[in-house]
Length: 221
Length: 221
Picture 1 (tube, rainbow over the protein chains, first blue to last red):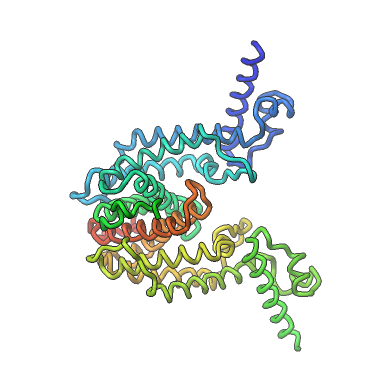
Picture 2 (cartoon, rainbow over the protein chains, first blue to last red):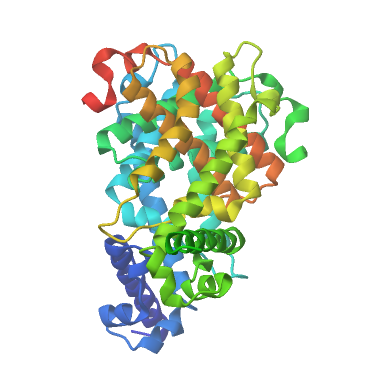
């Protein structure tokens, strides 16, 4: 193998090893020494291919986002159950299914999922653009149905609302899986998640249009 | 002072010192050595009045809950703005105001507020009953208006829904203040919080009654 190929292979191996470590034990299980042992390289060799372990976390998180994107892509098969009314707009059903897909992913891959949120960068370091673009891509799945629910809202408002809706669902999933308030069986927590997600989407569909008017763009304030 | 009075005074002083430390720098700023210095006692004397620092955190968090209760008690003066429709039931307005009160508290007392959620107990230790009772008391502020929104729901369902609604609002406030998704001016984040909280409450008010039927109690499943 040529030098560049070797470098690439070592980087791929390191990402694989970091992925295994995070999937098994979360971010706190990520140690350079273990990674070096797993891929069979010297400790210092890691830093010839990546600047630090944060770079590996971005790659692992990128794979996690792709897995979530996969769940989202097949979410139309999810049964929303009694959380939906017969006269709910289709976009409310879509958003309820997205919430279920998110819940299912977080419940099945809790360590990976937590790593998305527990990853704190050192002061001065920022998330690379290619990774931010993946976040934006994933949020588009929420923005698309949301646009049909609040047709009067401009793009910036939809962008914000999508993130707020996501944050609301994330809050239920997150405090629920951490058993922060009351320990619940997963089936109950799942039902709570879809109930509140559907309610929020339904409530936005009939929200006052003053929220979406041209003068109301939240970024204009 | 008699021994018991001295003990009590030392405990009160330690709680005060722990409160100052947490309010200024969060849980990670809580160190036994600093507390001993602040109250003028020997390091070991701390453990004559409390079993460990976790006990002090419970007392500080208890004060924080009382502060939130105070915000909640005066939340009827909060202006909900365009998030509310003229035909929203009063309970939707009440829940929207609770979300605003929670946002305002978290934004003004971020370190204290974070300590409520960042406090992880060692395995085997549990939250004392008197502190859990304070949590339940605070959630009653959500359960009361919620009951008028979903009159068909039983007490267990309301209890769960109140926690899910709270978790949703907490998710928006929490990811927002941590700037996890997109950095937003506080005024925008506040508006997002009340918009989604009102939407969720409004959407629950017209949710399918199959969710609340006698066979649908989430704890019966």
